[in-house]
Length: 396
Image 1 (cartoon, rainbow, N blue to C red):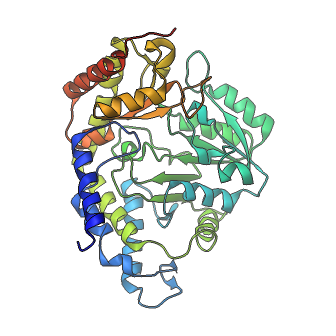
Image 2: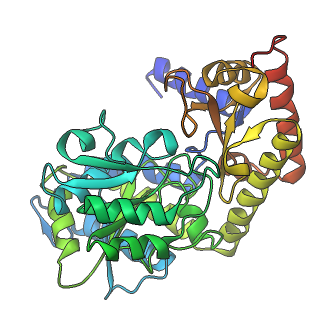
């Protein structure tokens, strides 16, 4: 590379990634093939529009790339092309979610989404997000005692508020979602059901987490978490008389984006092919095994695990109330100094600021990609415990 400054920074980041224990639940490590696709000549091509309907010439190959990606996306999740459509152009998860709302919910109408503090995402209608500025969020959360979803309470809330769309999904909720119950809730108030499976898409592909497709009208997902692909997103929608795919396509382009990033779409296609394999199913099973061991070991060491455990790749851990009085921010900084990368995170009913919350979020997808197994998780838990307890004082 002629630009030695950037080359040096890339090398430094590569070195950093290799040196640390990466427990960021939103991160993973892509294959060399995914990186090659991202760095390919496809980045040179402008392909505004959709296959067969581009606004520029020279897009014969572009159409083949995008169509192949769509075929692989539907195939990975065993979806019939006569029943489901997929848009693979969203640049990331947030614009994918915004595109769905733009397509199907009028400004000012209600979106029922999980409260941020309880594990939801900013784009599920939080007030600081554009989704909370254009649409009105009806927030739902977990039960205070069990710290899991109370579906009867959700149904009553939905029947009272009558949202236009209900979002099922999370960014920091460790338990399995009952999609059938969410479907029943949506039917009870005659609304659309969207599942944001960004965090657990790879687990669905690996058949270790329930699939939402039997019950959802729309499914959005990023590709860069448990699906182990590039930073990108996809929107799946049911084909029926409502015309959801057509509305969503128009919302993505020309509603929100111009030309798609073809190199990114090609890299998604590579990742989807990799995920459609026995090796990936084995990987997905190991991700959950590792998460359960890490969760259980931390609990044995005296840390409070939100909801008492995990069913997925992520763990939410209270470092403040029942630990040794370490805030989430302090815990994150101390662990990073020790070579363990996590993120500070609010916990349900948190009384502390999101900028210095009561907990941390841990994930096992990245370290499982690097070959870590159950025994490694025990060692990691003990190291986390040792680092956090080295503080020397206790707050109750």
